[in-house]
Image (cartoon, rainbow, N blue to C red; front, side, top):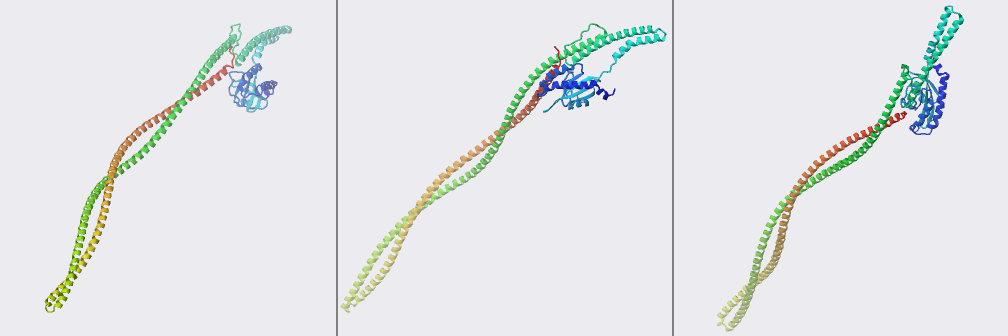
Length: 541
């Protein structure tokens, strides 16, 4: 029989109708759910109730993954073969011939359950295509001897009635025997089939009751052993899943806490590192500032050293100027004394010139009187005549002498008067010079005081500059020591920063390890949940 004829048979159409009927029962369950896991147990229960003698029932998504399968060992598998993908993505009822990986040949009927709003669930029903072999063989083996015996008897000339009786008796006996054998075999096979269905459906609490110990019945006992072994394995898996789930959950929680602690420690270390970098940058900035201050202090020291030299020169100059002013003041005072003495001498000369002038004036008066007397004597000599002629001559000479004396005296008086005027002017000028000298002496004295004060100021300035120079040198030394200290702090800061970076890197690695551990723990917990979900598919009592 070809594939197309097989798919068009009533058995295939009935399989599709049954699949659509079951899908209609599943639709209300799956219509309003957001996660399939919310109703997986309910769907599994419905499929188990409607499995009966079908090979399988399963709900698949669009990718062909079995979300629920009546064979718990195949639940969760991805059926992405051509038949499986067509069944998963069909939008109408579909019948296909399915060559299973178990070498079985089945009729696969599929139809949609729910579509839309991001959900796509299809139902698949599998029905095995049997080719009868054992029953016809047994019936043939039971009936053929009677038919062969009847044919042989007829060939040997046995009466027809006898042949009919013998053949009928043989057929009856062979048919009864074949019936008993077929019934016994099929009863056992049906038991095995039901047991295997129960096992594939996840019910590991059932076993076969075997009352004989022949080799044929031993198959049932082996199935019981298989069931009990699977039950033990699933029980141990359930216990392991529970324990692994608890351990993995505790490990995941501890890993989360450890990761949080490492992250906090990493944050603290990062803060330390950032603070160390900030402090290191501040130290570098402080070092630059101190270097600038050091250069300024060095420049100030050189300037103060130069100022100190200038102060020494100024002190020496002021000291010398003070001596010069003192000497000038002494000389001015001696000049003042000399000028005062000269003024007094000139005043005395002026006084003597006045006295000489008075005396010369007296001489002039005497010369005038002598001239008058000579004139009177001439007059008297003229009166005396010749007797007085000699006296007249003397008188004339006296008069001439008196006149000469008067002229000479007048000349002396004029000279003396002019000299006295000049002496008086000189006295006046000398007095003015004395006053000017006194002013100069006073100015020189004031200058001396100023220079002396300047000398003291220059001395104090020199001393202060010397102190400043000494302090600048000391401050420069302290700056150098501070710079060395900052260098030491910088080295410590570098070491601390490197240590912080290494610690932060180590923390990063530890955090990554812990996060990996947490992820693996979560994966393990999820796998434990998945294993529990697989174990929960089975009923172990």
